[in-house]
Image 1 (tube, rainbow, N blue to C red):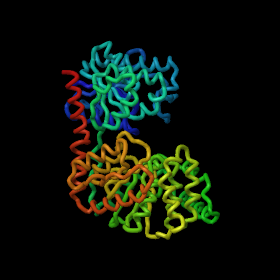
Image 2: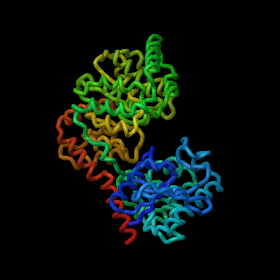
Image 3: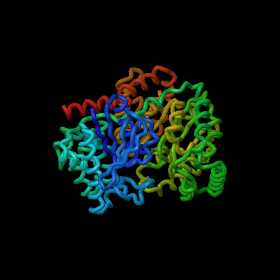
Length: 532
């Protein structure tokens, strides 16, 4: 089958970029001819790319051939402006602008440039079907291409377009409706995301429900795989040494200065708002510069609990940190916090206060966090815990919490499998929760908040694996007793982790349901149902 995949951005970084990269690669590995349309100008770095075709504004095409066989990349020239859902810097573009802020002329130019390039390929390469990613603007473009060429298309929805562009902007909503209306099928990752999509479009397009097909997003089971515990220290040390050029985040001197500042706050009995300024002083996209030295201090004979995610209130790392200290009253373990964000130093300050039993600092610590945007309703469990604990806060000197800074997959794939339990205590809805699947693929027990797409993933494992009972992988969103329940779930999971059979079952379920091979096999069935 000749498949055109439409994606208006890069092939690495965000979840949908990773999705497109892996779908294209795996479809080609399964014998299909794949044409991938994107704006990534550096795709030669991927070994599965065979050629790159630059579609110029005058209609000419310049091709660079890299190898005889592989995915063919098409890069339409869209001019100096790259439209996005969430602003960031991108090479090769003079201006990056959110879709709702685009002028009519700029948007029309973007649509026309993509439509012309894709229609040319559909006709010259005799494509059978188009797979358009996100609600905007690729489905609307695919619909126009379909009008010109009669090629059918489907749409694969991801959360970011709906949340950041379609939901609140009439123009984006109309473009999304236009693309969805013409699609032969609409893909969603799980039942929760389907409900979110229908809530948004049901009034305008109730028939959409009949088009929706559930195909899960995937996880790269080839890189996230179990690591024997006795090899963890060696694997991590080798990985950090091989990728030492990445260690450009917070350095040892900055860490010492931050700790000294914490001691000064203890002396004064206050946690000023400046705790959130530290994150602006170093790179948020790299691991700590001294990580190689600090991670060597981990005792891999003790159980390891891990958090992976952005350090913001919505991800709930503060609830996990509190739960860790409740757990430490009963079970010795180590907590590794992987990620970056404005709450990092706030979390580190709490770890210091709690370790040394300085209960008088807990209320000022919490007051500082309440000044973060949108944090008030996300701190309820912490507030409940502080009210009960501040006056009886004993030192816990044996506890160990390691913060790593940001890790990309080249490092995370080696560290994550060394955990016994990975906890994802999100307080805001998540459509899928990819990192939970990465943990399970590595044989690590994932624990999640019992709501949104996180619940859907947890249920797949709980209902498929004999060693798991109902709620073994889930804890409540509601603040009452949330922290204690997280601690209890971790304790139970650490007991379960002693059985190697559970880790093998988690991985086997990932390979069966969530591997890219399984995902693309499901996609091909949808393609065939449309083109037959």
